[in-house]
Length: 321
Image 1 (cartoon, rainbow, N blue to C red):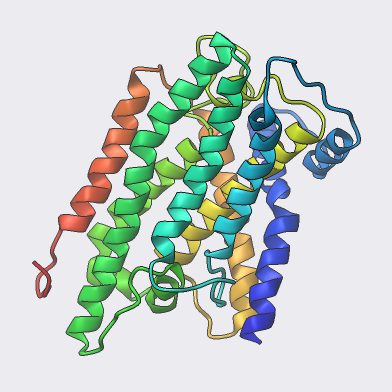
Image 2: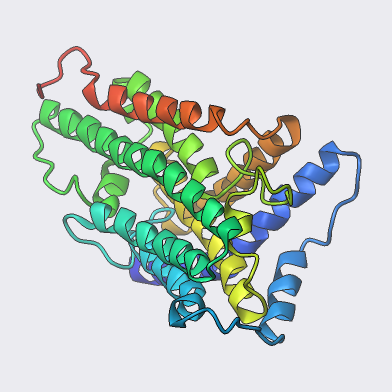
């Protein structure tokens, strides 16, 4: 049953990821007093782009063409390490937590390289901003997951149970329960806020970036993909949706675990929680504006500081230094 649900999670993620974009857009439309686009509009857009041709500049190399495909492949591989609902990840081993972050970094790297390969100063500006943001977001993600692992190590030692699989996302997911919030509530709350900011930054959402803007001075991710079209742009849109699902699964499955003991019910609850994450992102985008560029590093440094403080915070009775 667990193996079946693990495969089902992968299928649900691959099929349902674009629907998160639809939930966000419909939420923003409701706040603006509009009906909004059709629920399946992201699927229509991707399907339309897949049937179009692509135009390549003579100044670009194979990196520009391979960038969208490698970026999408990196996100898909990262998804294989993420557990969901009551089922473990498709791939799980000691240390996969670090590899998970690395594959997300590879996806970003080839998006940046494809933008630089065009030789455009405009896209180079967006690429430099993307790297600048990731330099603060990725450490916050790593420290946040490390803080969760530390809380679990302390809890299992207090209970007299050895916990050795703390560098695996599936290991964290397996041992994380709602009771952990009673034992390490302050640390987990700080990690939750930190990872929430990281999700917004990694997915290029407000207040860090605006995916719908076309203002030259404020564009970050959008400016890097201006020269892509057709199937390449479809891969980029799909990869962005899948990345949101991947990071949302980490946020929901590890920080806010909901366990009923029935694997299938846990999976349904996790799917509903994913749509709640998309709803929350839509509310954030509908109720606040994008931050000024100098304010973005301050926000990300705040997320990094919260994750670092959660990692160093020791509750009464803790056994680790």
